[in-house]
Image (cartoon, rainbow, N blue to C red; front, side, top):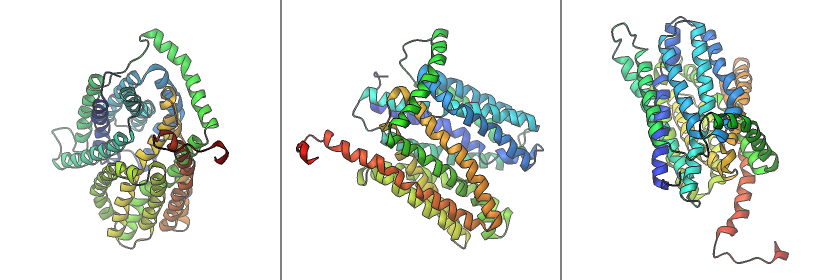
Length: 428
């Protein structure tokens, strides 16, 4: 890794990150419609999604420990291959159990894929320059992923508009494009991601399997020992609960203010693409936020702002107001993610980096499930607006959890300032 410069590491990371999210953008507009076209009901589609969610929850932490023990490159290669398998199965699936298998494979892929590429980037950057600020690259990655998803969604819509290709239905064409994009991403990964590992082959795999539980245990031990890290991971509980507002309740709210579900559905396609582009723009602001306010204060402020945008989605009377608030929500979302992950990385050493990222990601899974139950029940019993306001409050309440990271940064700051004046021990 040390043979690469910081700039080379960043360019490779951003290239791989964009290619990783392009197939997702191609699939978002068509995956539910295609399952319906092939005979699945909405309740069946909901059950299909549980295969992915349960496997991600079960495997998130073990696969993070495995990536830390074996290496990020081999885990990412297996993940990319599994994604290619799941997309290929999706293209031909025509029954509930086939789609269930598709999302089971997708769940294993997502568990393996969660964290190793980002961990590789941070470790490779620090290997090239121990003083490098990798938050800038994380912010650029957010912009790249937003652009890739938004661009992929627009391309998907254009492919559907072209109509069927012989026996291939119009909704299947973007899936074939996603397969090509995923194959290109896997080949690029093989070419660009280099990693120094002490051993390879079957012996290394066996040793890594043995070491993975220890890596997990030590990552969990970091949470017990670090109040800062524990608070940062706890933020995901609030975010997981609150994200139901803009991922699941927004379509219902938009249909409510328009008064026509079909018109609302027609608006959601371009609105979703615009939202991810807004997320990319928000992520691009990360360097400015770091310079103006610092990582922890900016992250706390953005959690509050995201709550405000969700309140706007719930209370604005017309579709224009709801959609503007929706775009603002995603812009804040794009800016906050790099700040949060950057703070996480500052609290953990390389050997446990992916395990801690997996812990952080895993926290959102049960919280999102709870939010789905509670907020949809509130929407049915009271109103969608009331449910969105409750979710907004939960999002904003997470802001004080960044206080330990801010205090830790203030305590550490004098140690890295060469002009700092020594303070007598009695005055500390």
